[in-house]
Image (tube, rainbow, N blue to C red; front, side, top):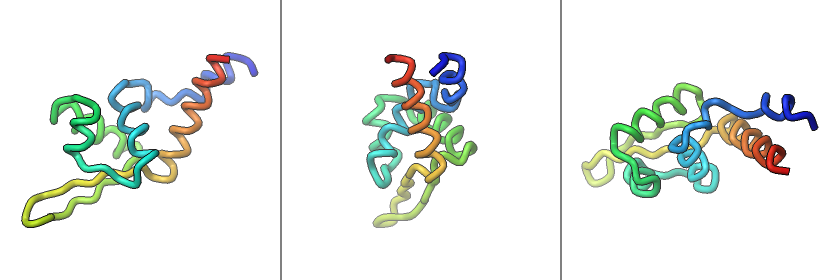
Length: 98
């Protein structure tokens, strides 16, 4: 495969380290809450929130807000299109490394 063709499959949405980490975690888990993602990725609230918002805008993740014992809990999960886009991105990276 030609490098130029492979590069077309790279997705700008996943070029950032934090977004790559978010998607990596959400693709292998049904869902994760905000604090779990924050601790896993070792980022600040604001940094994580802005990257989650970006992925949500792209419809790569979905957000579910609920209350557990009267405390707010926000769960994030990868959408079907988000998983497909992420797998395509990862496969392109793998092709470049061959």
